[in-house]
Length: 112
Image (cartoon, rainbow, N blue to C red):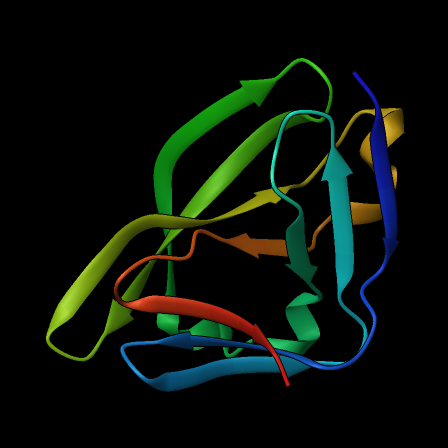
């Protein structure tokens, strides 16, 4: 399994229920064999007040242990749609502390 992490070109935005949670020109793109590319945002570019830590934890053999967050969006809670690797394995060290978001009906990630 090969993991590559590169600077995401351009400016990226993440929205929950239409509200902007963050914009970044410093996002990273994680490319992993067999998976769609994932955009990781620096925490400093995200409105962390809308994220609630979750008790969910998963383990990836290539990236390490991920912790999750839910988003308190207007009229709904988006459960476990944000994750972060606080102590990633060496192959994923560049995404330490960054946040990734699971796109869906109420959560969009776009390049501006």
